[in-house]
Image 1 (cartoon, helix red, strand yellow):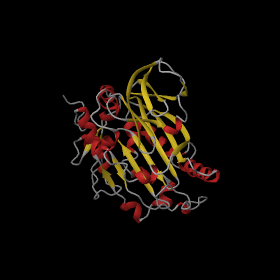
Image 2 (cartoon, one colour):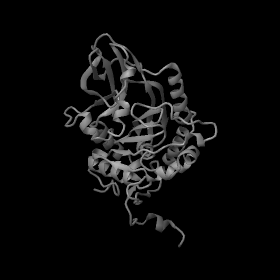
Image 3 (tube, one colour):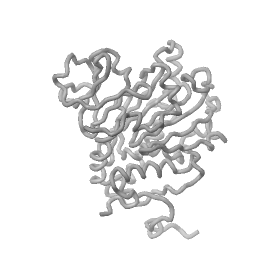
Image 4 (tube, rainbow, N blue to C red):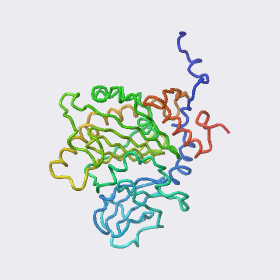
Length: 354
């Protein structure tokens, strides 16, 4: 095979691909904010973060400050012209702005949209992507036991890509030791309308990693021991059910090369003290700030952000691997960027073309 020189790298691939301009162009980013984030349903927080009447939590969607407010029998959302703290209590809505559409769905998540005329409910927007874990997250009331956030110098889609492509799994020593078996490689990427994907389950052998034990004794309702399901929601939200621990990630794009990511860990409200401590240990050992996997993902996407930031040489990112929809088939990537291009009215191969 001849060496890959500059000419070979820049010529049009003969497989599916996208341009790096999808990740680093300022005009593209502005359109994403206006045509995607300002129109879709966004998971803002969890009901357990609004435990009592008049509790509120602030957030941001498409550079608009919002507040969600527990009014007793329901939750309401507004543009936020008042509270500056992340959470607290408000006795009336006099400092709030225009009311926004808001729903509680899929395990108690609070969903908000800036869209003044949404054509779909949350259920219609998610299109069945949660069906694989619905019995586990909707049967018993859940609550958040872990929250942290990170601001990373990378494009928000590069973070979401880590849950759509699985090449990077080889970067995780823990995954290689505990999960690279026949079941793992047979998992399916299953596309749903609106750019969503879920990933079918397999059995994780936690005890294969030195210092870890089998986690089969503690799970979620109707979830067999040591199973691992994942739901990737367009344009940047992930729900990860790994046996005894449940995690969600939510992105807030801050610029073409900067994103705020919020991480939450969940248990069952009825957990005993011992069960809760076990869930916290299991969650944090993999997904906490100092866990086995999360920091490796963040380092990876920060490196990608550096090499693909605005002003770097344009390149092509290949999405051409076809393996009958199994875990290393890039169907999740192709499906996501097809929806992304449709919402922006651009071709991801040439997003700046007139």
